[in-house]
Image (cartoon, rainbow, N blue to C red; front, side, top):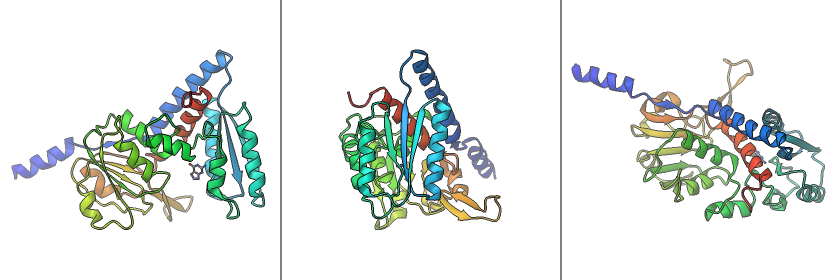
Length: 308
Ligand code: GUN
């Protein structure tokens, strides 16, 4: 009886820490705003982000308007260049080249996906790596891999910042990354294994072909769930005290919300949270950090802080 009470008591006081991405992102936006105000008062050029948007994909429109709004909030200049789906690859490459040579623009993103007749990789590689604030150019990816200063893509950079601000210990920990995408899983596995903080982890990458995934995930001290399957990670798959970073954003229809849909993470929060030491919610965890990471990269570009 006493034992049971003791267990419930311990469980009560050893609550998990909710990693508040929304509040952290707001704090970072304030910090960036202060730097930009200082630049303006010193008559320096303020950071300028340009975004190219091709077509009328709903999600892309939302992302780009979110980026524009964030730029306004921190006092950046922003330009959105819109094209119809009929633009040719050559015309798009010409525009990128023009922006590459435009000294008034510090950072350029080409919103993805692009229409099928345009070679996405060719467009990414046409962006000057010094303006590639998305961190998608192979030069930036390569520099990141060998530990040189580089633009780190927004989601991994946001996750690193959350780990830093919540002072989560990473050294010697076993980190399991679920998912191997170029934008999240792959860079995350490299960044957490690097000789730095956050880093110095022993990293295992799991993916769709992994055998005994449950067994591996159960050995993790830190889990980065980035596979894009709603509520995939359940309480029975994790050990006590685990740190859980949920990168999933699956939109599913819901009759309980005004919009008619609801966002779900890759983590079944209800069963995983009670076993965690730190956990990110969805929404309000990793998501809000991505745009601020893009702002941070643009600020670095304006200050020419990555490529000396
Ligand atoms: N499409 C979805 N996410 C992103 C992003 O982070 N950058 C760009 N350029 N396109 C995207």
